[in-house]
Image 1 (cartoon, rainbow, N blue to C red):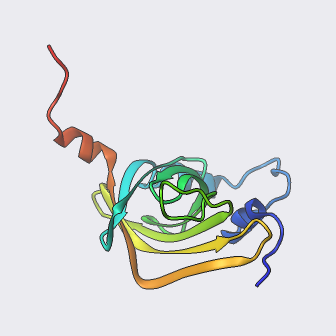
Image 2: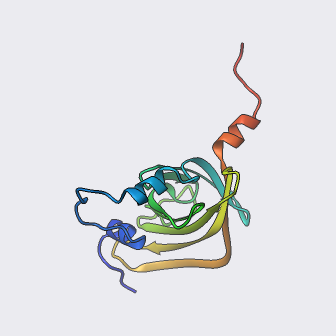
Length: 167
């Protein structure tokens, strides 16, 4: 299967963002929904079925995402709210090999749908991954109904640890 040109264009198009120049008057409803969304901040997340794949990421109020994965390396992405506590996230990683010691040129597109808990301290939701070779061919597609991320806000993790600072 041959995929279209421009993975980054696909990333933006995948969640319905317009790739034209920014309008003079941005939609303030969407901007406000993003700026106040409970996903904003730093998170740790893992698929309980793959516990060695612990990821870290930051959801920014402008709809961008940066993260790191032991399988994919550094990822960049975009997210958009789909409700008060729900969202869609698409992340691009530039390593196709899940072995952290091996680099395979290509693009892994990770597609996610999350719901943030009522207290704003955790999230969960399904994900899928599509691997695309540099020539645009699909090399793998991982879509498993059991694939779920479980996330924890970093503030919760960091504040549980005892201080290691010498006084």
